[in-house]
Length: 334
Image (cartoon, rainbow, N blue to C red; front, side):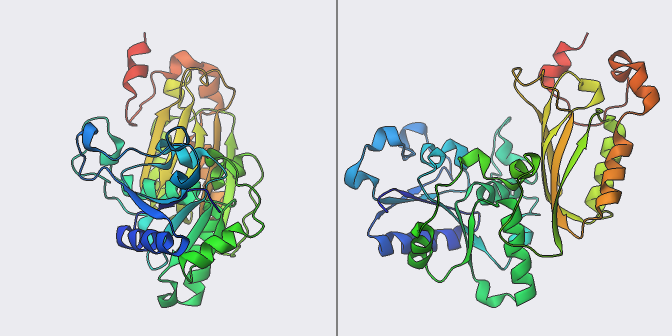
């Protein structure tokens, strides 16, 4: 395998050890890429790209990507031929996916790495973007919990190989042996598979479920906020991850991205070329012990009622809306 190898993971010591061992085992040079602490632009190591590398020996390296950098910002990660290994500490995957800490305590305004829950968001992004999910420290985990965390990883990324690592060299050989080309980076996530009705994880466990929720009516923001509190409380099961698309009645002209992990949720407006799409609510939920009927009922109750639907968008603008404002949308309101 002559392509570069990319290593990611939010458990920094484990990721660095793995990347170093992988470089030694494959005879590649190790390139560590990080922005922590943030360096002046002229001092930063460049993130390698196909355009800058060309071919030959320059391709023979292992890129150890710091947690401050998300995969879509690494040009090489968008090439489906290039393996992306996500190193996961089996001892605390669930804790990583529930972590409320920011990625950067010093993040400036507008930098979402300073958000509450940003570390969990990055953890799930790395798992969802991997071609190989390699569990380390698994020997210290009992079999039922190990089956659980591996199944969660498989649900979060059905396109990835999920392995109990016995060493980076073995992992890469397994990845190379007859593997079909991986899907594109943004098509690997389990929620994307679920919204396409193609969610078929390699590993299953009765405790883990992924379901698709669709609703043709927009959400009443205040009732949705209450429903989210119920979901976070665990009343409908332990929701590990949910993602997809949604509309709020008070901002009905805009399709938003629903992005939730652990106890943190982001609803961000999408670009104007998507705003005219017919999608209203289309969200995938992955979790443990999910009561599917109760979850669907809670979300259905947050949608506008028959009477509210008849009143129309002008009346919807007057609804109570406790959810964070979208400044660009607020400015467009009459």
